[in-house]
Length: 296
Image (tube, rainbow, N blue to C red; front, top):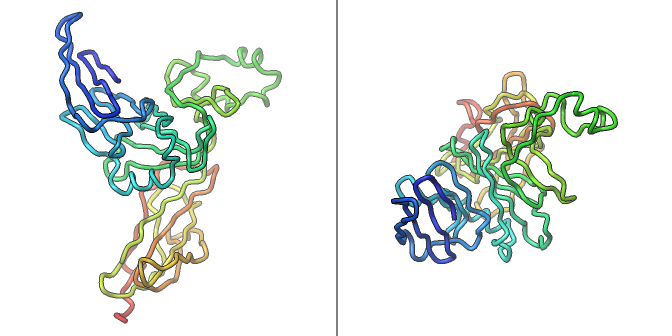
């Protein structure tokens, strides 16, 4: 369950109860949902007056006016396709208090080990595009903090500065403020403070010009990096096998050049690992980037 100063929630596999404190030792209990609970007790994480969890109906939140579905159908469907459904009870959740994001660590299909190998993230401050995911291996995730360390402390802890596992300017050496932490497959404490992983933004399959074919000359990736590359896939029918064009890098004009024709399309932008960037707003087409191409 999860608690606040005034009460909290008790999660069962087939129900959710809410309790409210009236006096120091007096509580009222009320059934909130009789059929909707969770089989993933470690998936529950609280923030302010809300609790977020993975339940029988997917990713949900409760509090602040009721229970709501946060994992729209495609998120919940994607999760079931990419997790070991026999091990939903080991899903582990953690809140990164510095950025307001909730992470769920889970095993992918066929993973029967104690090291879970994928993570899905919900950004509470991004209502339009709140979901991302990444291949991350860890045994457990949680909000953690370390005591502050000076340069003298580091020389005592490590034989050389080259052996220090994090940059000297990393916030981990400041101590005090908690951040997202994990125990890795070697049972060692680690923090998510390394260089950026490869980032991929991909659209779903869509029909750019309803009832007609399209011709695409390229697209633009909204973001603050010039190191991105991208590609498109065009098909005649939704059930056709996806065939990607060769990837191209972004030009000085901000265009990722691609040439393809069809009725349905996907577009994908990739930012290389180690690139310094802060945001990727998505994929966009200007007037001449995408035009109708006949009706056959």
